[in-house]
Image (cartoon, rainbow, N blue to C red; front, side):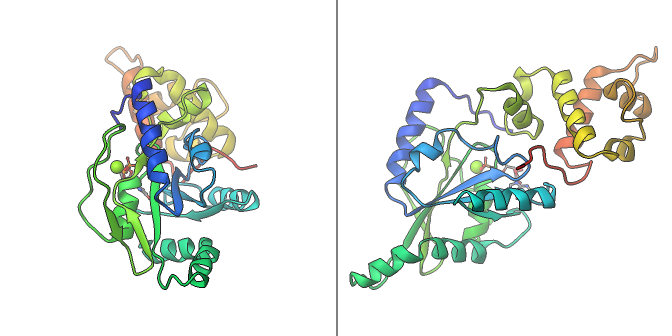
Length: 279
Ligand SMILES: Nc1nc2c(ncn2[C@@H]2O[C@H](COP(=O)(O)OP(=O)(O)O)[C@@H](O)[C@H]2O)c(=O)[nH]1
Ligand SMILES: [Mg+2]
């Protein structure tokens, strides 16, 4: 869970820093959470990376509903955006990423060759909102074990490039941009999957939002997990009663219920689910 607070000053600096760094790269690798590919986008990146080739990574795909991820990938491809589905925690992704970057920038490479540049090294930078898996992704791609310290918004450091292979270099620190916080649905989805701190949100609302989404989009999933009737009465109450999250007087311990339900959802204890659909 991230502790970054996004104040206007930080946002202005993060924006400035990213637009400076973007000038140095041939391609932007934009990480999104495969479970919420729309809500995990940064609202500004599209504008900042306007003239750059972009590669969207649907990360944490191991946690998402596979058929939904495929639909999302097709959605992006149909809209002229490059997209790869990734599990950067468990999968070895270096070759797929390098191949895709070279494929996207093929024409640029050919032009460089035609101008007599014998070997152009392609430069890429990873961007995304906090907790989407940027450090994990970079470490995976560059085959390192230790995690790099995050570059905090507004903190300028000397830029370091890591050579992935003879053709591609990666900026060693990712660009961090703020999540969307303009509408409630988006905030609920981000908090539900642990992308933003849920301290400012009402836990009951958050739980109900998650459980209702599951009930409506994955019929039977709550019954299978908690052995409750999905379409009768209060879901939180029903789960808490089954699980015996009760105090001595038999009254539901709501804080326990909220915390454990949210934990189940965040830790994929209900299986692979996505909270946003492409169609
Ligand atoms: N299951 C799964 N977890 C991931 C994946 N990528 C990152 N994570 C986890 O997500 C959390 C945040 O990852 P991190 O790389 O620190 O995100 P960052 O803030 O964008 O740099 C960590 O607990 C990672 O282990 C993935 O593809 N699959
Ligand atoms: Mg990080």
